[in-house]
Image: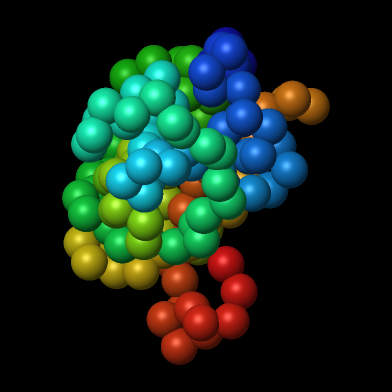
Length: 141
């Protein structure tokens, strides 16, 4: 079985288009400036309907993490261990994703990470995270 491919909806399409282009986009409330993730029709902080899609840094810190030795579902598309994490983005929201790369297994709670994208089809790229070199964090995301 191949990996499950997300199906963009009307509300999530700008998020997935950004990922396809290699840019992490979140909604931001025009009224209270809160960044919103998951895509929503209303700001969860102030109930405003004035939400815009904006590019964000793609930087964050590991809030929680676990290593899955044997994925429960073949739909994950891999038999390799997965490092699943909650990443608190610099802009505030917490995103669940995978930590990837050769040092993924050594990532600890509080470690800096940055987004990268895994293209799984012509239309869909998944936002995943890699360990970040904090000394280089001021340069590029």
